[in-house]
Length: 331
Ligand SMILES: *[C@@H]1O[C@H](CO)[C@@H](O)[C@H](O)[C@H]1NC(C)=O
Image 1 (cartoon, rainbow, N blue to C red):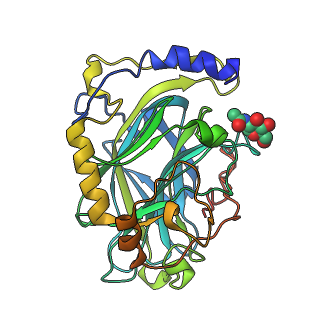
Image 2: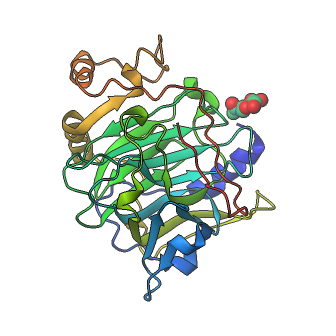
């Protein structure tokens, strides 16, 4: 680790050190204007009168998206999201962190991606990370959910610390990525901004591009609320100066997984995981080193759609200040 990173880690880790987590009710909920700005598709981004909820829509003209005003280094980031219902094949809603606009060649990323589906089939969630431009090594996992994410708002959260990344759905941890030595730079380790977008990913999102977006059903509307941006805000020009959030009650910020959460996570993964890069022999003859082979899991995952998303796609994210362009192209 170079001194740039070391300094962040020393200063920021002080603020993100508490154990266990079940609810985060005490964390400040921000209004849209306090935390975010419009990114693209202005006409398709509507902030509700209370300034606390936002609607993003996708139609034949454009998708839309917003971005956090600050860059963050580590923290807990969360939004409640309600996804568009009915026929949504090819539609992708993403809630993710990236620094592709600052580090074009060696960007980092932490992703929640919601993949639309044909009528009568459920949305799926995909999680992934990149570090230091490691876009040839996708670490995707996909899951079904235990509820219909188009019925109501559910909370999707990312915890990012120096040693691990945890994805949560409501208060269930669904994935933990522990930083390992052999991952090297593949673990996200530079300041990132948060993004929320809806866009047309007809080429890959549903059964590897078999089903496209059908604009007969547009506009596709995703709603966001309950914004939590609880981390160390970094100055975008001088990347080394930053300010960490403090909370009245630090116990509300998660930093790790308790044994009971771990049991819940294992049970979620057994029931709902549909794809893991660790078992994708077409992409990886030898899976990345952090993968632990579990024969039962391998067998279970075999029956899900065999479509692999391939590697080598560019994972560009739009320039933060260029609003006219669709900001994400995902694997
Ligand atoms: C990040 O990538 C660059 C090359 O793009 C490399 O020189 C550097 O060592 C990498 N950093 C880490 C921490 O792996």
